[in-house]
Length: 310
Image (cartoon, rainbow, N blue to C red):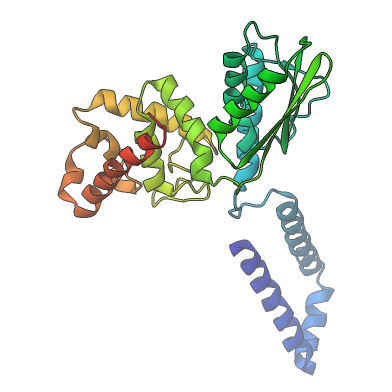
């Protein structure tokens, strides 16, 4: 933006001088004298070429202006990694035609629950075959001649676990039975979608996921575009990580902080999103606004624990 203003200003000045000098005989005389000078012509050509080169280069370079981050593709990418991780663990077989381009997070997140119900109900289960996961999950259970009673129990079990916003159906075949699960509720917001990454990061670091979620809430309100007064951006406004990477980097920093101080309050204070509050010390207690921020983080921990993050 500043560059555009400066270029426009210089062009306006040059245009103004050219018009002003060209309106009077004396001015036009000066212009003719200057133009007859080879040095002046060369200097003018150099200036014009320089300005043109700067404009072209600037136009070709990526924009440095802040761009709003669309969080949905970030969570779709995380959902994709979750599916691939489950496949590597042997939880299911994936059809070669299964498209993982943009899996719906509201479905990918519950895939472990769906597979868990199947494995709990069916004795000696065969390996499920994942055929589709985008705006619907399609899983085949192969190798069963009779599946009717188990179908009913699987549908009831999944419906009980997932709730009424999910539509669950099994279509029985001769030896292969098709499970379909669709989500018909309101799309999850960033706070809901951050729950699973926060749980994964917390398990890795051995920390309380509810504490991590509460810190994120009171730092950025789960806004990927948040910018702290330290000019760092993201969910936790820290230097490390982009997008969901900040959750994992933040979990590691929280682990280090908890191991370095005598109480949880000091560890939380290290995440206070102000430039002069980076570090582990007890000086934050002398500032009412900082103390209140730490208290608010602590107060919301039970909320996340009551919602399954524990």
